[in-house]
Length: 195
Image (cartoon, rainbow, N blue to C red; front, side):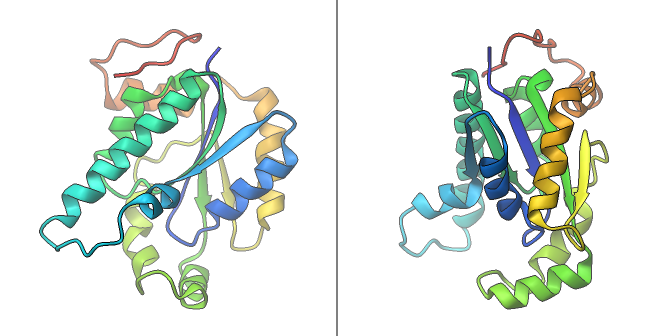
């Protein structure tokens, strides 16, 4: 059986990493937290020109998606810390992940709180979350949504944990796959599609 992918999608500073850390403490089964920031941190520290940067970032994200798919295909449960801020990212994930084994969680936060967190962190470009705000949730379909404006990361993790045993079908990923990738053969509920 493939592993379950808990796919946390939200803007920068929305609280995804904090929720993921709490999930690792609260869920009974073993999970791996695979944040995309860890993949960016593996890259060499040499200066990358503005002309090169988009291609480097795209290759990094593509590799990240394939690493997550590989971990899940090997039977590992994975918590994904993601930002669906570019149009190609969701279709790429829909092709790679077994849609029946993904729980898509929308992580929301108010613009005012995002701005406050960004300033407090000091490690993100000013206005990054605001720039991502509309695009990240544009696909509009989730299995579950949480709002970290007022709810703690632990509360959100508990909400996700309580949802897992009764997750409905079709999943959000199955519905999105049908809507956005209609030409793809639907993988069986027991398989993970890898390309």
